[in-house]
Length: 269
Image 1 (cartoon, helix red, strand yellow):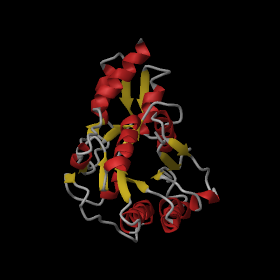
Image 2 (cartoon, one colour):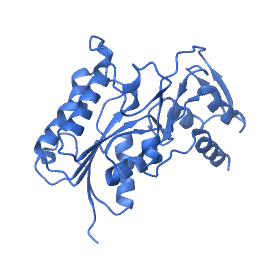
Image 3 (cartoon, one colour):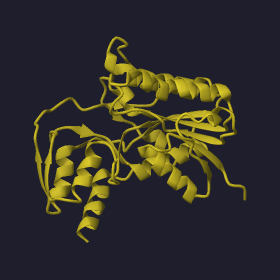
Image 4 (cartoon, one colour):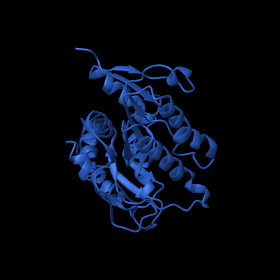
């Protein structure tokens, strides 16, 4: 049986690196081009997983953000040397909504005069190019808050989990009232592969429910950890992303409390 071919753009990143590991283990022939590799526009790419992007420092590097989120994928689509394209976007694109629940077909709302919207607008352009200019070969994955506990994993929850390896006294620079939709990295990778194999259009890659820091803290406290928050802010929660379409592909994220419980119990073993 001939191995399926995959190209992972952004393979050195958080999601891309785990995706390369999973695809290789599943028998795919994986190419992980380095940043700026000119062969990306000249060789046959098979299924492209576009995981390149900036998250934490997008406001400080707006032009690099546009390059990563829109310009490079534009060149890749124009070259046309791929069979399928899965573009990794973000559920942050829903942040302008004033609804409790949002679906993939929801019109997006942006203020183009807000300099911090460069992230959202560039991701939206990448989505548009993928969906409208790829000849029906593209799909979009809007990733929620992805977490893991591997060294260097980004994000508040990841840092919290990593810290738990070295101490049971956890002082966190956040508020117990903040709520997010968390999805583990391995569930995210499974969703991306399912979208590549049988998906069309846009998918929310999320758990489909918001979990507060206080609820997560109770998972830690039940296992002998002490958790203290430095802040008490109560910002409005983000919209909840529907996961109906993702469930239609047979993919469901594990509840964050269950994943954390198993991880913490492993630390104590």
